[in-house]
Image 1 (cartoon, rainbow, N blue to C red):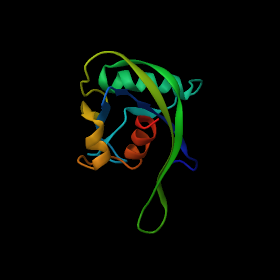
Image 2 (tube, rainbow, N blue to C red):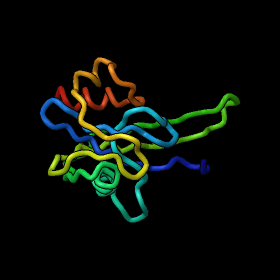
Image 3 (tube, helix red, strand yellow):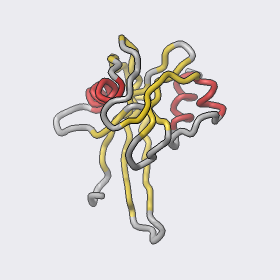
Image 4 (tube, rainbow, N blue to C red):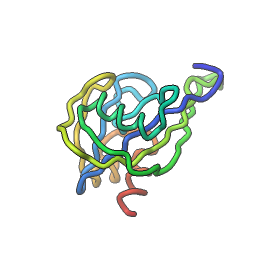
Amino acid sequence: MTNHPKLAALAVVIRADQVLLVKRRNEPDAGRWGFPGGHVDLGETAMEAAVRELYEETGVTGQPRRYLTNVDVIERDDEGAVRFHFLLAAVLCEYHVGEPVARDDVSDARWWPVADVLSGKIECSQHVDDIVEKQYSA
């Protein structure tokens, strides 16, 4: 971990009553379902990063529409030292084309019923349900 938080973008894609999620292969949250996303590159906006990561991780293309929220993810070890600190910019993206295929640093990618996410039927990263509920009920 660096001595400062890392900025990352999440692509939140909801189509009808389904949300596109990926299973993380790497820490943090390896093995959990979350939104496609990753680091924002120097000179890139979080909106640009969200659609880039969406394509890199799933093969799905989309168009960024607006920022939904920001989420701090801070994980500490047993001694209290920071292992990870990310500021995640959740970006609502409109689905264009493509069927999700696991690529890059994810082990699975698929559409999930919103109801399954909100009911806790799948093991998601922290805040996934909050973000889905915020957008789905809007």
